[in-house]
Amino acid sequence: MKFYTVLILSFLVLIYSAQSQAVEKVVHVAVDHAPPYSRLSDDSRSQGLILDILRYAQLTSEKKYKINAVPCPFSRCVRLLSKGKVDVMGGLIKTPERQKIMSFVEPPYMVLSSSFVFYGTESSGIEVNSYEDLQGKRIAVMRGGAFFPRFDKDQSLNKVAVPSERVAVDLVLKGRVDLVIAVEDTADVAMGVLEQPTHKLKKMTYRHTQEIYGYMAMSTDFAESELGTLIAQQMYEMAKNKTLDKLVAPYQLPKIPSHLIDSPKVPSDSFSP
Image (cartoon, rainbow, N blue to C red; front, side, top):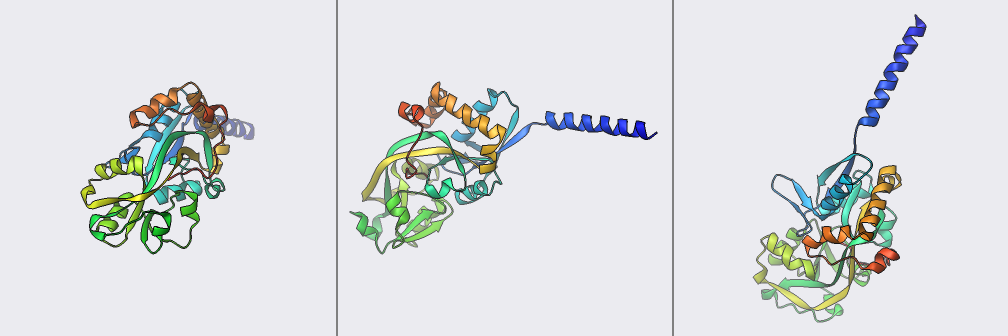
């Protein structure tokens, strides 16, 4: 009797094991509201470039998996990724601090040559003609965001952390902060999508210009997994065969420079939101 019990139990274990292997893995993707590159509608359905890239990779993958979009404010998305509560996030800039808590997938898929600019209100009378003019101003910054090294490391500035671009602009318009920092190439588009009264805003003269690289980043555990390794390899192959260029084109992003693909090492001080 014991022999048959053991046999049945062994058979049930084999069935359970086979079913477990048949279940598709799920890749949890953090998505913040950052038009035009990602959008959350009123019913929280997420759209965006990072999802387009992962869905293409999913269709061409030798392994089966599902994609689960996790809507969250930017700072919470970064926190979830750093703690391994989600697997992937897009559009992040590589910094030494972030490299300690997450893994960046080469090459970057967002490549911009743009400026960081500061917006205030026309009625405030504030002028920013040089970096030094930022002293004494209340500056709204995205919580958890990274901008340019001098600004990020400057502890003498009065930076007010906010959860979203909408909140940052609202605070400027209400006079609760003096300035908000933004990427010039995307700020005007984003403000239009967010239905902000941009005619009341004034773009300051001072700007910091540099190349900006936005990456796909993975939680450290997911990056070391078989599926994470596969997706990272797919990302590189998609860049190499120019598929990535076609995916970013609808978002008015330039093609990925060949030197980033052939020698995909980019200085860690490059900007990221």
